[in-house]
Amino acid sequence: MTVSLKKILTLSAIGLSLSAFAQAKTELTMYYPVSVGGALTKVVDSMVADFEKQNPDVDVNAIYAGNYNDARVKALAALNSGKPAQLSVMFSIDVHELMDLDAIVPFDEVVSTEADRTWLKSFYPALMENGVVKGKTYGIPFQRSTIVMYYNKDLFRAAGLDPQKAPSSWDELVNMGKKLTKTDSNGHTNQWGVMIPSTGYPYWMFGAMTKQKGMKLMNQEGNKTYFDDQNAIAALNFWKDLGQTHQIMPKGMIEWGTLRQNFLEQKTAMMWHSTGNLTAVKNNAKFDFGVAMLPAEKEFGSPTGGGNFYLFKNSTAEEKQAALKLVKFMTSPKQAAKWSIETGYMGVSQASYKTPELADYVQTFPPAAVARDQLKFATAELSTHQSGRVRKLLDDAIQAVLNDQETAEGALTKAQKQADRILSRYR
Image (cartoon, rainbow, N blue to C red):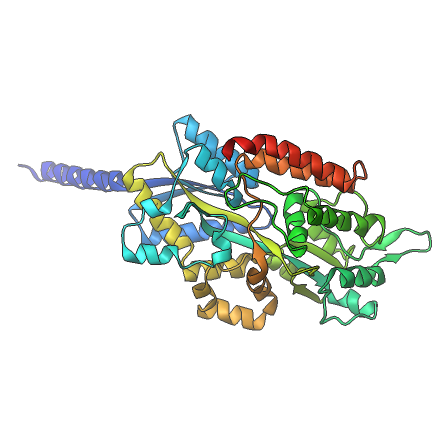
């Protein structure tokens, strides 16, 4: 055999080996949403890159899919296209709908070791309320949040208010809001006391107010809503009164997507928004600001929010194990701490707050702990069968009331009747 022929055979053998190695890789496609804007996609890309370095046998195609609704639509469309994703981050409240579609598999059926089962129980219980159905875990918390109150301490000082004390009750919210609302000589309001977004996810904000009135919007089975409860009606009347009666908030709609900028431009002294905005506010505010739990009526409260990891059923056993490995990595204490610091979303486990990185961060920047501390007053986010349809009924009712088109009692009673028609088949 000539030297040249030996080289050719050797190179061919190497090529075959490399080809076999490449074929041995498990490829995963993962959709994920970003709902609060900012450079969060870069954070996800960085975490995925770190995972691939540690797991060279897995390739991850992480696809930013828009907001939560976009992510659900694209992930489900992929299932029907013949090129399904193996996992996705989607609304934590999508669980019933995904189960009805027979699209997802519980993590309990994929984990195999005692360590895996211990991991399943390592997350804050409040963050699991939307992910566990009939004793099985379908959703693992990732980009999770509660609603918090951001407030401008400089404007508090200018209004003669204690900058270290945010309103802790609805009455205080109204009274402080009146002192913080400013009008010019023409009667034009150039600074509002508070803004609460009423587009995007109005049912989420409403869920905070109803929790503060001591009630939940649905049952755990997701087949019954309580939209026409007297406490729900009172909560919606309170929301409307902030603009109509107390005049500390603009009347009508307040946009979810532009509210953060309104706060940064000091057009409002307080805003209710996702803790997922925290790092963006921290990096861009030109004033002294604080973060507080939402004010109480009968009790404190906020729904949890954000996205969970789901595993899709239509995957091979190898793909499910690789997806499980990725989810465990992304929710590990170290990665959860990184995600929380770089975004403002909360760490999803107690262990994440015990990492040196997040422990030091919370020590030097206490607002980072508010969403976590509020978890003890939190409730599950509105989640039902046919969640999108039911949620829209409530969103439409809320917006009709805030736009002064219907009464709270009329709009919520109608929404409840329509929700009953949709959900009765699931009881």
